[in-house]
Image 1 (cartoon, rainbow, N blue to C red):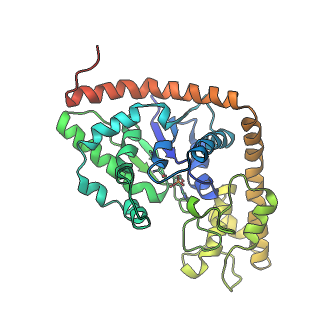
Image 2 (cartoon, rainbow, N blue to C red):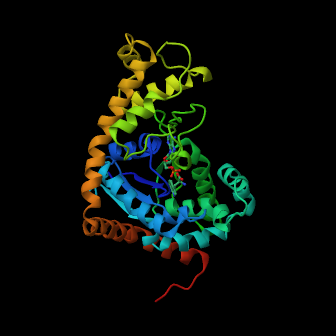
Length: 334
Ligand code: AMP
Ligand code: TRP
């Protein structure tokens, strides 16, 4: 039986945090043997808002090292940098020409981000079409993402359907795969908002992947909870802080909700809870940080891994791009 294709992407902007890890990367790692996987560090998406060039380069390398360190295995998954496979940008142009402007103007992420900026790049509006290109070039069946990216995957489906309708069956229609546990890790300093890269530098907001144990412990100690003392899962907004800590613990330990609550049945208040959640997070991240440090000390080895990933990705994306070019009426180079 042929394996289902999985495609997902992650931006090399700012610090990867526990939310990215639990909501995305950890699941990629756990499932990599079952599927045929493509994981892409989407540097072109990051350029849609202003970046410092040197910092972008540094963060792109650092993120790829972190993903390998987190357990993405080059023998099971194809991990590559988006800009190394030029078919993504070329495909984006072709899909732009069949995507109604109104579809893009409706995107929630665009409206949010555009509202926060004085000047908005064309790339920011076009972001979901590039994302659709990422996915459709690989005929991916499944796209694991956090809840916030579901709308973009649905747009990729719409674009694929429209293209198939206009030019004949070309694309697989992808499905978003949103995991329930860890789909939304909330900020430690404000459990009403999602932990986010753009706030990850704010003290107490996030646990970053490379934080030292002492910092992780401090972040959990300061985590906002409520004035009660009951340690249980709850969808009451007033208990969102405790719920978030329990969710983090649940995803890392792989336990069921009842088992998790039983673990804390004798906790003395939230202090105990915070301490034990910090412990499991520290132990989860420790080996990742160690492997990361080894990889970053050998840039040539990292380059070799990335060259191999890009080559394997091109072997799929380039023939697909030719097919798309043929469909729309381009003269293919002889
Ligand atoms: P980004 O930080 O936007 O590049 O997101 C990379 C991946 O992590 C995407 O699949 C996001 O949906 C996911 N993600 C980002 N923030 C969180 C969060 N707080 N909780 C769960 N998943 C998240
Ligand atoms: N937009 C996604 C995010 O910020 C990243 C991304 C780019 C992506 N291309 C993708 C995710 C393709 C899944 C599939 O999280």
